[in-house]
Length: 193
Image 1 (cartoon, one colour):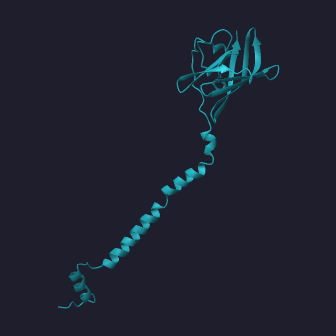
Image 2 (cartoon, rainbow, N blue to C red):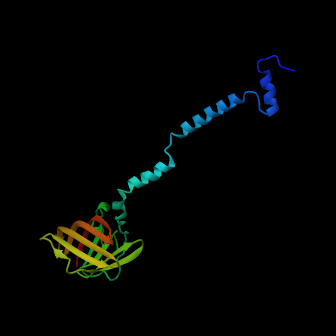
Image 3 (cartoon, rainbow, N blue to C red):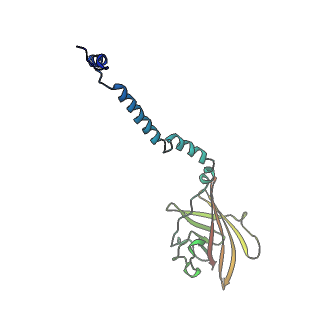
């Protein structure tokens, strides 16, 4: 019952052990397919490298973590802001000075001269009191007003660019601090009585 071919003895043994003919070829092909799949999968970065990249980027993140978001824009100032007021908006909005009024125009800060300041954060009103000790006239055209309250410190540094009767048109910066977080914004505005 021997088979004439050179594989006869082996064929009987493979049939007896439940193995099929060419199992060595099967395992070699399987090894090649697995290797190709592994190499093809190496084109994408490993998930662990993303985790490490986040750690490397965290060295730049402290500046981002210490950045306060900009304040919300509002149209109507509260009723406590009347009389001699200052109304300020983002310089980038290019809002004309004629469109800044207590009840119209997009504003980020409204002040009642030497008394209170009002701004909005996350839809909530923030009212601050004027800090007389920290506020000062820098020079003939520049003033620095400081307001504090509700955990915020606001420093408004403005330079007068034009005077129209009792109305002053100005540009400058608004620096808002809450704890260790800060944001500095270029502003333009109008103030007067």
